[in-house]
Length: 413
Image (cartoon, rainbow, N blue to C red; front, side, top):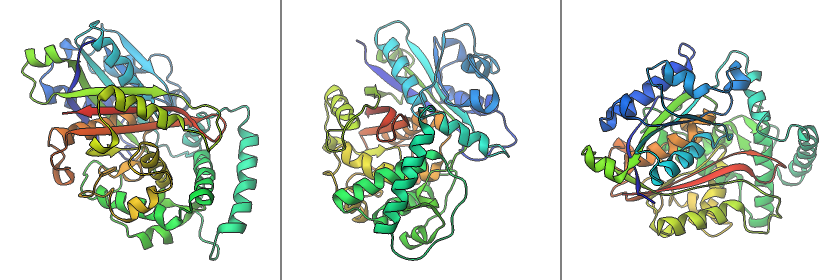
């Protein structure tokens, strides 16, 4: 197996791009990644394109990658389309890396893309519903609603707050997981607000983030409620965006004199399973495999980008990835340890909560962010001396208690 390195990466600004189509966004990201490493379109030997929902949103099926790449003059090569919920583009990297490591090709392109903003918001909400087992979705929603009603009577303090309006079904899934965590470990809404406030602070240093506004813990708590205990700043917005990276063999990187080669030391994907909350999670087992493959441990990681579709997503991930003991992710954030300058900076991009979440683009966006830090090019949010970065990405659910798809990727300088 050959060593595989990232030599180029780029992304668009995430947000509401009403005046642009997916071809335009992909061309910006791909051209940026190619320019970053000095590789010509003609040198790319294969492309993997992650996208989750354009079939539902626009009717474009089957050849999504070929459509956007041919529009910018890339054709005649294998194009693999990958649909795997929010982990689509992270899964695309998994496939591309394997072929390069095996020697089947020397240089490959990975793209993550999504365009989710439409005047009719129900179209995007339908895309999220499709990331579940739709045959049992009505029963799940009913069960979650009943659980939420009981929990609010038992645990919620204070009067009724303004509601934020329509929401994805995944906010209810996250709320259910939060309630379990609160009962078992004593985690609090204020700790969720500390995670969210930290990520909104980080976003002020990221010009490509959808939101770039600092928010105090008090402001996060006072915001409109999505579903208790989640307020709007604790939840990721949908958006439009694309991210791209170029990977190659170490030999190819040396042959072109690439100056920014970062090793993809581990790239693991998995899927959720039926288990009791007291058992070891799928994510924890996947992370252990990734650490073993990369030859590092959680104590060696200098920064992490994790899947904070809600603030609880980050709290859960830092525990399952071994950055804190179980039940102590909230205190870790409250103490400032996951803030830039802290012991283990998490989501210095602003995370999904601020960068936005065009779902098929998120996995590669996270990894490009790490790549910039490990090559000392992250600007004001740079983690000094970063040498090891971890990205954790997940999406979809079957029964509402585990991930449908998930990935852990580790980069080494």
